[in-house]
Structures are given as structure tokens and as C-alpha cells.
Length: 215
Image 1 (cartoon, helix red, strand yellow):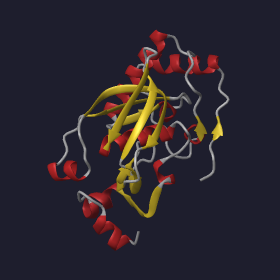
Image 2 (cartoon, rainbow, N blue to C red):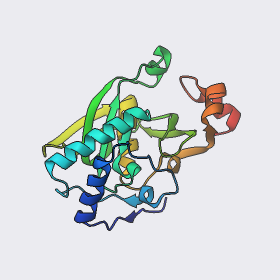
Image 3 (cartoon, one colour):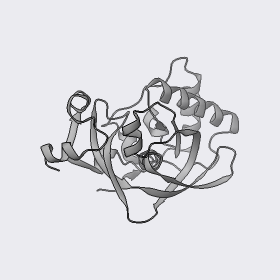
């Protein structure tokens, strides 16, 4: 995987763009694969936005994530290369699917400058999608348990362990901030449209798809 290029946005440009996003009446569009902002290393947050602007931006991102709908949204996905992401998973899931994927509710929170490390060698492979790769899904094998460290919007340092689907969400959104899309880590032979996934492969686990699609 080729390393993403660093973003060279100035603090003033970041603040100006964030203010424009917040001031617009409509929700921001979610940019799609092929946009350069998704392939750059986002700028670490170090106070470029004041507390009020940061809080307003996080709220806009939360509403955009809900409207999509999705379980996470990174700032680059709305055109802002800042190391910020919001996460929340409270959607009702089929019992068998939730059990197989270890999917438990994830209350809303925002992460600034997140990093994660795998805990142990266990990996889990499941179909995964992205609001910036509209209409497609693919199997991604990821660490089952991780430790994440980030800064909360109030400036406090946070650390937590995540497992199952929560770990997948944290990894997916943190990857965005490094210019990485889920397709970079995916089993490419598993790639399918959402329509084909719904018709054929929406099982709790991807074993049937693996046999038929050859991955």
C-alpha cells in the first residue's frame, strides 16, 4: 500500500473551511472515492478550531452521519483534512448477525488524533462498507481487539479497548485520517454491489461468499 501524501492545509484554511461547513444550512455532501482529500494524511488537531467551532463541527458531522445513515464519519469525508472523527452505533441489528459480528451498541463520541494498536493476533473477516465508496461492500480482515488512544473535544487524553464490531468502526474511521479506504485492506474478489450483497451474501458471516467468489 503506497503511503498517503501529507496535507499542507494551514490552520487558517482549516478554520475557514470548518466555519463554512457549519454556516451552511444544508448538511455537507459526503465526498466519494477519487477525491484527493480521501488520499491525504489529515492534519493533526492542535487548536486550529476554537472550542465553539469544534463543537459546532462535531454536531454537523453527527447529523450528517445520522442522515447518511452510517456508524462513523471522518472529517476528510466532508472535505476537511483534519484528524477528527465521530462514531456511534445504536442501529438495531438482526440477533444472529449481531452475535456473529460481536456487534454491541456504541454510544456517540468524537475522537481527535486517534491511533490504535492490535491486541493479540486474532483477526475477524466481515463485509464492510463506506459512505465514501457508495454502493459497494467488501470483506475486510481486521484485528478483533484493539487499544485506541485519542484526545476528546475537551482536551482530555483518552484510552480504551474495543472488540468486535466496535473495534472495526474505530479502525475504519482512524484509517480515513491516514488516507486509507477500506478497499485498500479488502479481499478484492469479495467486492460486490450493495444489491448483490443483499440478494446473495447478507449472512452473519462471509463463508458462503468466500466459497463462491474465491477469496
